[in-house]
Length: 288
Image 1 (cartoon, helix red, strand yellow):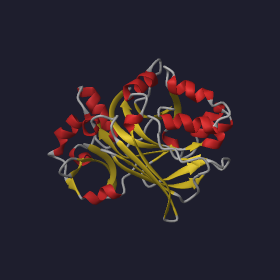
Image 2 (spheres, helix red, strand yellow; image 1 turned 30 degrees about the vertical axis):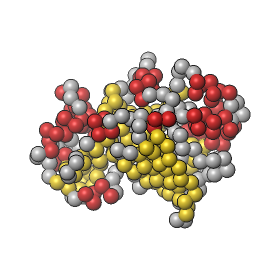
Image 3 (spheres, one colour; image 1 turned 90 degrees about the vertical axis):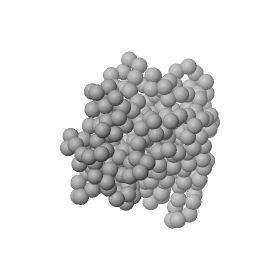
């Protein structure tokens, strides 16, 4: 099942997409207003989110599928974290941009992955919103990634994430990573949360990105999550290790789709990310 935040009858609702229909879970139970509520019930009852939804579907009115054309941000995370240098091409790109390239090779081949703080809910936007590029940077790129959704540290589903990044700032000095990664509108997530059962193996998903400017494709490429050198389980293990994680979090798993050196995003560019078994995340670009 896939879970969306949508506008229905003038109000935000939690909707579930099944194989046959889109249904309004909030109308079936008033306490299920957001994805967080669904995950909380699943945690308390010791079941999965799909089990909770299945118990509500019969009482949930059907919605027109058009509500999925303009979904809201599917969840409001307390924190977003991210993993870096989990694909070979990412390691190579970081080496090209950095004044200290050996650092990235050591991370790619090392036992411990790079896990860093990406932001809170006020840094994050949803489908159709603008993602940001910094006004003090001249080399900015999107980073399409598989996102693991965690409730109290346990994976409950997956989403798409766009880990916006200033390659100029990070390349100048790796210690500037927080400024390259954490700023207004630096992350988008969506269009939904797909349950673990719906996604199946998260390490065999096709991913595509398209960046367009004035209707012209500036960059288009595809990859598979099978190219990750780390597993989702390993990344979650390091994220939660000796760390008091929040109730609801998203952990981004790294990117293999990095535009070539010389390309930078500009305001009004359109970024489209497709991820198999989850959906499509679209955002335009603004300067912040």
